[in-house]
Length: 255
Image 1: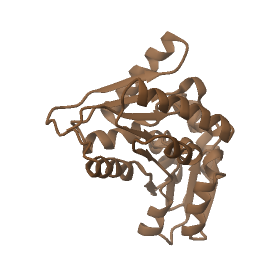
Image 2: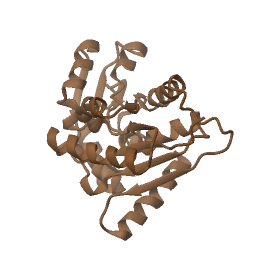
Image 3: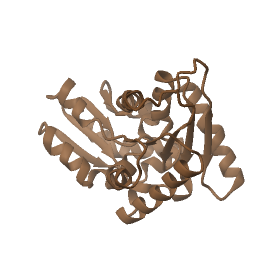
């Protein structure tokens, strides 16, 4: 039994959509979630900037918070920094990725939209996945600024953004891959615009992967008691940190 927390890294609070399935599957584990809103969005940064920042955060999660595993709950961080981090640190590092293979497995003939940051779409990691499972009915949609609108809960601007981005696909799209952990928080609006669609994201797969990796390494808590969740935001403004924390736990409670 290992009571050390599982660390979560995200560019903001979007990774709550990954934490929630993990918490549901492993309720007795404790979690430490670091939202790096001071450096959000990651999708517009260079590879070197993302790797350096993720390295700094993981170092804190390992050496200060004594985390037994780290989850990269940000698709851009996963695409750009996972390989480097796994080469440097010995603890398990579990990385989310766009759930494009799920389309291949479950609805391969459907017209598919992949919504992600430009950094994710242009990454070598995603392109390997895409060309391996390409159904030749897929449109890649880089969504610059979308994660920020969701992060800041700017609902009117968010709807206008999505209507402009997606209106041409209404009635055509069958599958939507949500390639950023913020995007599931906008599912209702996306569905309003596109109609009946199937959503795909990697959160459930990450939760199962966390459990299997921890079991393999004999790191599961197994206390039988509800674990705790700690949230820290990197904003320099105390008021902003409090707002982020309030919204994070609000979303964790209802997502």
